[in-house]
Every structure is written in C-alpha cells, then in structure tokens.
Amino acid sequence: MLQTIYTRKIICLVLFTFICATLHAQHNKKQISTKDSLDGAFDVSDYLIDANGFIPIPIIITEPAIGGFGGGIAPVFIQKQRPYIDSIDGKRVVTPVAPSLTGGLAFYTVNNTWLAGAFRSGTFVKSRIKYLVFGAYGNINMSFYRTLPAVGEKKFDFNMKTVPIALQATKRIGVSHWYAGLKYLFLKTDVEYTGSHLLPPDFVTPKEYSSIVSQLGAVVELDNRDNTFTPNKGFKVHFDAIRSDNIFGSDYDYWHLNYYMYAYKTISKKLVGGWRVDGQQSFGDQPFYLKPSLDMRGVPTARYQGNADILTELEARWDFYKRWSIMLYSGTGKAFDEWKDFGSSLWVYTYGTGFRYLIARKFGLRMGVDVAFSNSDWAYYIVFGSNWLK
Image (cartoon, rainbow, N blue to C red; front, side, top):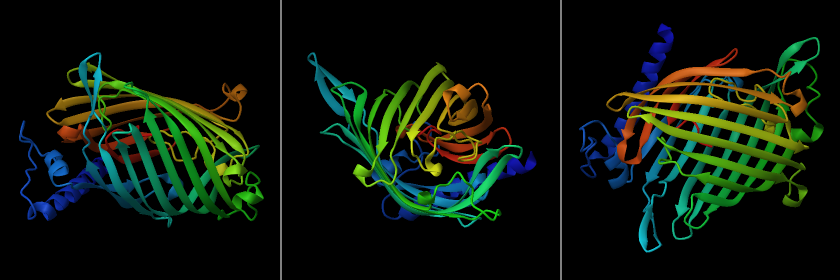
C-alpha cells in the first residue's frame, strides 16, 4: 500500500516537472500567465492558445507483456480550431470543432522493447473532414498466452520488428453529429520466437514470421460528446469493418469488425458517470498478433485473445475539491473463438481508482493517474484526457 502511494506521488511530480520546465523555457519569449483568470489556479490553457505550446506527457509503462516497466515521452502540440458556423431555418448554429493534435511518441522498457513514431489529428473545417495520420517503427519483445490441454495457460515470448502506418478520414454528414469515412492500416512485421521452449508454438504459421498486413475499411460513427478530452455528457458510437486482402498488397485475407460505445452523463454538479461497451470479431486468416484481445485497464495486452471479444466498463468521476477529481471504475469481459463458447470462456474483471486535475479549463482537459487491477495482474497509467480514446 505505501509503495503504491509513493509511486503515485513520484508520477505526479514527474508530470508537473515536465510541464513547468516547458513553460519556463517559453517564459522569456512572451509573458503568458499560467494562472486561470477565473480561480487563479495553475492552468495551461492560455499557454496552449497564445504560445502554441505543447504538453510533454511522460509515459510510465508497467505493461507485463513488454517487460513490466519502462518509460518514455509523448510531446503533444494542441491547436484550438474555429467552430463550424451553420444557418439552419434562418438561425445561426455554432458547432465546436475538436482541437488539432500534433505529436511524437518514444518509449523504452526493461526488456529492450522500444518504439518511436509521430501522429497528427485534426479537422479540415471547410470540408467537415476529421483525419488521423500515424507512423512508427518498433522493436517489440512481447508475451502471448495460450491455454494448452493438461498444461493450462502458458506464456510464449516473441520479438517483433514492425512498421505501422495508419490513416483515417471521416466526413461529417450534413449538420448532424454523424460521420462516415475510410481507414487504412499498413503493417510490415518480422517475428522471431524468443521463448525458452526449443520449438516455436504451433499457433504461429510460417508466413507470420515475415509478412505484410494491408487493410482498408469503412467507418461510421456518431459523436455528440461535449468535450473530446474529458467528456461530461454525450456519447460516441462507432462501427468499422476492415478488409485485409492481397488486392491491397496484404499477405492475409480476413475481415475484422470493431464496434464500441462511450456514454457520459452528468449525474450531479460534482459527479459524472461513464459507460463503455466494446467488441471485436474477426473472420479468416488473421495473424496471431492482431487477433482481438481484451483492452481494459489492468489487463496485460494480448493476455486474453480469441476470434472475438466483448467487454463493458463503468466509471465515475467525483470533482470533490476545486480542480481535483477522484476516479472509480470497474469492468468485465470475455475473449473467445466462437460465440457458442461464450458461456464456458473465462470472465475477466477489472477495478481500480485514480485522480485527475483540470490542467486546461478552456480545453476541458484533465490529467492524472489510474491504478487498475484484474484477475491476476495490475498496472498504473498516466492519463491524458479520457482513458477511452479509441
């Protein structure tokens, strides 16, 4: 218990040290207040708007699948966008536009896993098109799990050298909150088995040791959340259907479906509730490292895999004192190969707590730390905005 408390304090100290150092470096260029004009509290809204500054997000990694501990940094530049202005039945309607984000990502873990990349998300306001671009190179040492007859769950270690490139563009439909568009993923991956067993596991096919995934699909979503970073109300509903095919230069032929919903409700002046439902389904020849797996706080990546999964989570944010909030959350889910196996598959559960600080009021941006536990694992995370950011 004491170790957990000290860990939270260290993470919080590192977080604010990075932010304060960045602000100090810009101080001589232009005098910009880091105090909010409403309550006088520490706030970086004006810095982000007037100085085109950035928030360097420190990354503390406790992911068991890639070594259990590591660190990195993700410098993120935030640029506020002008809203849509429409005329409906003679009335002027103003619709906010999510800020543009430009940033990088670099991390390293104790098992020599590392990755470096860059991303950009934004909106072509005149065209009403939201877009996302991401590219990286990674050297990933990762553990995967399989349940074997008469043996039980076994861990298998792999090294993956991979180049992912992702593109997505969705267009707003009329003046509604609906969007539709396309997404594309290119993934060049070289896999090496590094486990202690003499022979590699039989769930890996020969072509998976060096292959290309190239997939294209359609996206439809509804998003009326009041804030992209830390919503207080509204919901997001998403569905995508992706096809990997040799027509696109892929070594695999399969379909992958993903659907999810985030719902937020302001229960009282200081209490906000959230509900998440998320599911995946794959059909066909999919590489083992891309199979659906449960994605929840406290659950190791790829620990619970199958041809399908489904999960749900609940969370509550209590704004108990000025800009400070306490988080409580819990969830459960299953991963399985066939829907007929749903009843007999393992229930995976998670629960945890955390805190948030309203660091940029004009953006509605809260940052903090979460600590989460699952069936036999635990982890902690530095959270930028919401933990649900698909």
